[in-house]
Image (cartoon, rainbow, N blue to C red; front, top):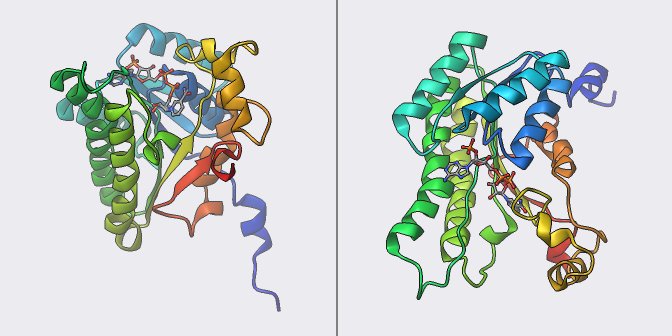
Length: 264
Ligand code: NDP
């Protein structure tokens, strides 16, 4: 008898009824993942620092029949983020999925960059991942039924770039943190922790790179076997996969999601 259950195969990608906490939900990728979790039947708790944007997202998603709520916080602030976890649990009773989608960059050559500016990037992109994952890990361990953490980092976690001593270092740290969190949390507590490492995708900050006539666009395209740059929706499949039972045997992975950037 071949050993695979039909019901497992039919339901393996489902996040129906799960509670998904999304950080950076006001961002280009965060709002898309938040809505996608909602469309997939999850209850969505959003967080970010911008209350007006979060309220607008809640209004939009609620009108679409998505069960969602939000609370504001700076993800690098322990007290503020602990309050987000409490608010999510007060609203939905538990947290099953964490999607870490916030991020920040202020490129500068090390010769021109202040230590304070570098530290700010490290706090925004690395310390915050620790704070967020720690708070949610405590909650998931208390719940006693495992969970899924998906951290959005970057291909810049694996390679340097001019002006990126803050961003590359913090994203590299976040990817290694994901490797280590898997060692801390998966075998003992059933919490899978993985990261998605994209190349450039469309956002307010990167829109200018999508001009087909620009040298930046042409350079990127030459390094993208897939033949185009990414849209935020390109990462929905990966996020749902890493949030569902389909990825039960995957943990500590820094997942390439770059349109083939690494193979050229
Ligand atoms: P956006 O810039 O669109 O938004 C990210 C969100 O992060 C913002 O809405 C903001 O929410 C929050 N944020 C901004 N600055 C800070 C800060 N200093 N501290 C804490 N939170 C902050 O990001 P994207 O959607 O483009 O990117 C999502 C993730 O993917 C990020 O981690 C990014 O580094 C990474 N990435 C992006 C790429 C791209 O091309 N766009 C490529 C590769 C990786 P609020 O103001 O509400 O707090």
